[in-house]
Length: 154
Image (tube, rainbow, N blue to C red):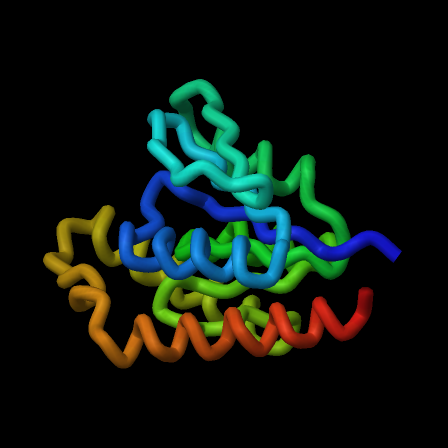
């Protein structure tokens, strides 16, 4: 059985989360691919790759969806991308450490669409707070749990 991979929606992935992913990829020898429409400098590793795509709406997201397989992990804050990944049988984790599942993704999509409607009507809505130490720890814990489960399936 092939080992599942990690796919990172890297355009908006915080640097601290990328650093956690670099270390985890090397430690567990898990193939981790960062996809973005701008250049990223990555540390040298046999387990970390970068794919640069053209700029454009959802180009990086579409590349991730096209390449991922069931059981893979997708790191993204993009709710529609998380929904597509789940639909293909992947697992979606956002940089704050929140898992998206079949049971939760529809509610997240509905809330996202509602907030989008509010913003487009001129409503002033604050963005999410800065990534906290607790968010980083939650992300790292969920990542480690996924990696442990994946390693045990080899």
